[in-house]
Amino acid sequence: DSGVTQTPKHLITATGQRVTLRCSPRSGDLSVYWYQQSLDQGLQFLIQYYNGEERAKGNILERFSAQQFPDLHSELNLSSLELGDSALYFCASSPRIAGPSTSTDTQYFGPGTRLTVL
Amino acid sequence: SQKIEQNSEALNIQEGKTATLTCNYTNYSPAYLQWYRQDPGRGPVFLLLIRENEKEKRKERLKVTFDTTLKQSLFHITASQPADSATYLCALPETDKLIFGTGTRLQVFP
Image (tube, rainbow over all chains, first blue to last red; front, side, top):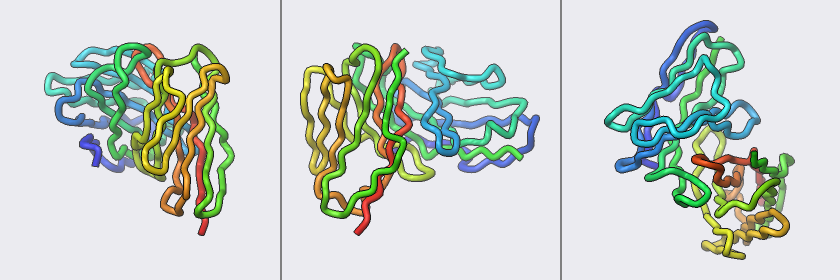
């Protein structure tokens, strides 16, 4: 158990709908990262928050948004869902910020939310 | 931006043998590189970190090397067991994030 929790575990919805995925980081971790992993695809970095502020963005679609709240939990909002959005969505946390010279913190991953868009 | 290349073909080896997985990167050498294990449908789990000034790192049956000249890291599992079957990902830092390779699937058969 990594200490990172994600809800819900599974989500089935229809195209055009909007969903919210929730993540609670490990106690004390200030950074939260969101990743998308489609079938047979690698982990695609979406977005990172550090202590409530957005710090890095990856290939995140405009239909997707996220935020980190004062209690450090984070939510990923996916709207106008398409079939291609079906994937595993992982949240990870670390104490600080991953970076070339700042920190060597490992990332602790949650169990993921499996999203199926029908 | 940095690109990571891992062999997309599965590696099948017999129990007891040493598995060697490769991670190549294309641009600047990172300050460190990490290896993770991922089981189907589950989140990756951190295994080892190696810094740019370290040639080799060991943890139990695991060994990682880092060659900044070749822009390559090798991940070895000695005396492999069926329980080692999983996908192994390498990751390295870029600005404020980690980028991950697509991983190599390892299958250890009895």
